[in-house]
Image (cartoon, rainbow, N blue to C red; front, side):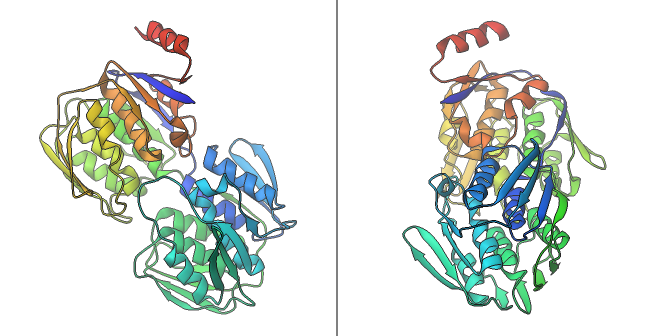
Length: 433
């Protein structure tokens, strides 16, 4: 097993370029199999979740060509199975988009129930509601969701709660259904818009993505396309908060500043400086930052995927802050690890963290419980006194491409080593001492 070793105390300074949005890429790659023509997708993040999804597509007969590490071509003409049930698939929630894609194209699908990070309940009832409304029979058998329809027909679908996954899956299934589908209380996140734009580039007829009402007119078939995925707002936000936490100065390039407004607002509120450009933001922090209250909400609110990074930053800010997690009930599991580093955080009723800012954190051995919490623990290590070891880095690499090398280029004293290699630890400490 690999781990990160970090010596804290150095401000991050320089430029970093953000990659393609993982959450958009998962939906777009699934959608690419819905045509028999070749699709070229650029700005694809080269991370484990994406690579496993591509392997799954190959396993059911799809053709995947790597043009380079961030550009792929996919052809779904020779898909020979709608059964996607592999051990590696069950671990990643993004594979669930294959249900909508296969159902939309072949009118049947059998896909393993989703896994992913253990951050709380993420029910699939809204996905099932969308599939059934379009005319599919849906059963749960042997750990699979099994969908089958003689014909998919457009319908009016209202989601009691907004759901990114259900919105995207329903769009996929509906884009080749007969007639018109209307999705009300649809998710408005940027990656919903990106998947809709990609489908439209393939000949779909989807309007209203980015609002709470999406209208889809079914088309007989989809065609090939070339498309570039939007920048990853969560990767960008992570580096924004890393700049503030380390008292650094980072220019974060290849971003859409509007997608970052919730993060920018909170950074300005606690005293950091943020400059916006057409496709970049610069974050500067010169001293200790202040306190604030944060509540996670669906987009355009403060994203739950940025809550661990925010909580970590506030742990060394002055005064008392309150962070309320309204999306996932298990998202504060990393707080115990921060406490090991000297943070003063009390979690109340599992969804509210009361944070009393401390002067400093100290290095410790900590374990990443999930993807975003893992990134937050790296930030904690960067601002801690002494050495920090972050275990379970495979979680982090599910969502961040070249994470440690990007940090190193910004000046972080950080390396990835084998957990059993004590010589590597000594070598690292000798190098940075």
